[in-house]
Each structure stands twice: as C-alpha cells, then as structure tokens.
Length: 389
Image (tube, rainbow, N blue to C red; front, side, top):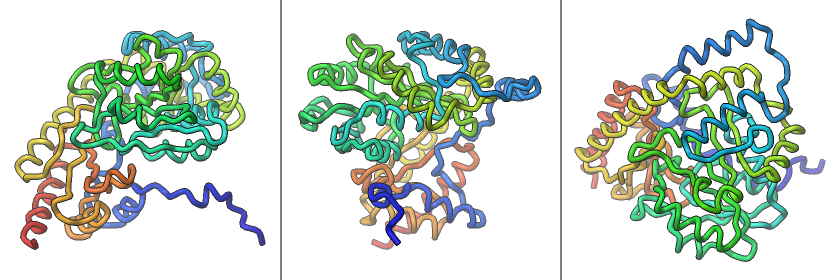
C-alpha cells in the first residue's frame, strides 16, 4: 500500500510542549507551570452574553467574515489601543483563534519557495504554518543579551531576494520580550527598504508591563504592509471560546476571507456575541488581570534572584525564560528530571526553536499559591543539582 501521509506533514515535529503535560495529567500532586492559559475564568458579564445568545436561539451561521457588530467593535478597539483604523467590512476578519489567522495569512500570501523570516524562540505554530503554505521558514535567532528583541542588523542579514514575510512575535511567547517604539521604528525602516510584508502576532498586546504596547502597524508606511493578528484568549481569559481576528489591507483580507470560507465557514456564533460584550465593557477586567499577572511576574523575578537563577526581566505576556545552562544539562533533560524528582512541569526552551537550548519556559498564568509551592520545589531541585557538581 502506498504511504497515505504527505511528506511535509510526516516530517513535521509534534509540539514539544505536549509530552510533558500528557505525563503531568496522570502524575499525582504534580504542578504544571507550562500551559499558556489564564487561570482566570472568563468574566461573568462576557459569559452571560454568550448564554443569552443561546437562550435567544442565535445558533445560526454568521457571515463568513464574522458578525458586523463584532468587526465594528474590533475596529474601534484597535483605534483606541494601537491608534490604527480598519474598515470593519473590508479589512477585518474574525477567525477561530489567532492560530487560524496565522495560517490564513501564510496561505493567502505565499507562493512556493518564498521565504518567511521567523524570529525564534517563538510560538510553535509559525514554522508549521509557513511549511504547510509552501513557504520556506528562515530562522533568525534572538539573543538573551539583546533581551530577545529583534535587531535591525540581524534582520538585514537574514533577507534574501526570496524574502517576502517577516513574522513579528511580540510580546513574545516564550520569552516575555517586548519591542518598544524605537525598536520597531528601526525594524520598519528595513521592512520598507526591502518591500516586505509583516505578520504581527499581537495576541499578548494587553499584557505589557513596562509601557503601553505599540503595534508596528501604527508606524508611518507600515499599515499597508502589515497583517495584525490578535484575539480574545489571553487578554479576556477566553481560551476555550476559540476566537481571534486578523486586520489587514483590503487586498490581503479579501483573500484570507476566501480561504476562511472554504475551510471554516465562520467562527462560533456564541463566541462572537460574547466577544462583542468583551470589547464594549471588558477594559476593567483586562486591567485587573494584567495587574495580577504583573504581581506574579515580579514575584518570580524576586525568587529567581534569591535562587541565583539568571533570567532577563520580561515585560510582556505571562512567561519567564530563565537560563539553566550552568547545570550542564540540555533543556529537555532539565525539564524531565525536574518533573521526575520534584513533580513540577516546565517547558524546554527548545520547544520554541533550537536557540532556546539552555533555557526553560515557565508560565505565571497560575495562582500565587501554586507558584509559591512550585518555586519551593524548583529551589530544592537547584540546590540538589549544585550539590552534585
């Protein structure tokens, strides 16, 4: 019998995050600090709107691009948060999570063999989406000494005549790195010089602790060459509602919507009605969750300093990316041993790209109580490791 599996799928690696949490789910008293999911419930007024939509029998398909009311609210939201306006009818597409938007952007714009620069460490879906769209991922390694920010000289060096798209994964998963306005301005100069398109994944835009998030789309000359991707999972604690969106120039959005028509039809109707409520009345909820995450972030950094565990200070998302290279173990070995000996699950840095070797990702989307217990166990583990040298 012929091999039924496509070569590019067969060669694709499974997510490096999952194996640890398959083990954790069956391990008694284990604590997981690995999943990037808010520990907050979706705010009640948002849930209530979803329930109300069901009670009113709103179980129909929406338009392919999403409810007009939701697209209008998305446009208003981006105008007030990133100072960029989008036509809600022609330039906004509601998707099944931000991940679908990334996939659609790649498939809508890439011809076979065209290159996409993917800064790493970064979200696990970028490279597979590029590959499945027929593109060629070009990995650009971000460095701890640069606070994992993208530098214009490094970007310039990665560009070839085949380069078409730059992924901008900031605020960053897994490092928590951010790009400030002056950083983005230098990147924008390179992008415009080489006539690139930017796919800017801003799913963590509301979780920025140093200053208000700045979108590269808001800079002069960048709106017309940027696809902004965002969603409701992180900021509004709506992971299970599976709702995201893309905002892009009309010519790009039209083609993304065409693909979306064939593979999805439309995003979940109940989720869309709930999202309207989130955008209209959820700013205070976001502010409260952001403050809670910031408290946890500061707590972790304080504890790492006490442990003598090096970690650059992240100012975005809800992750820290400490350096474990002193222990002479691979990231995978470190995480496996920590889980086995202390029943704490964290993610190897290599799950987010080869340059993540020597680091681990720890999520602080968990209660202070769980974080305290987990950090006590991690401290004991580090003491044990140092005593074995």
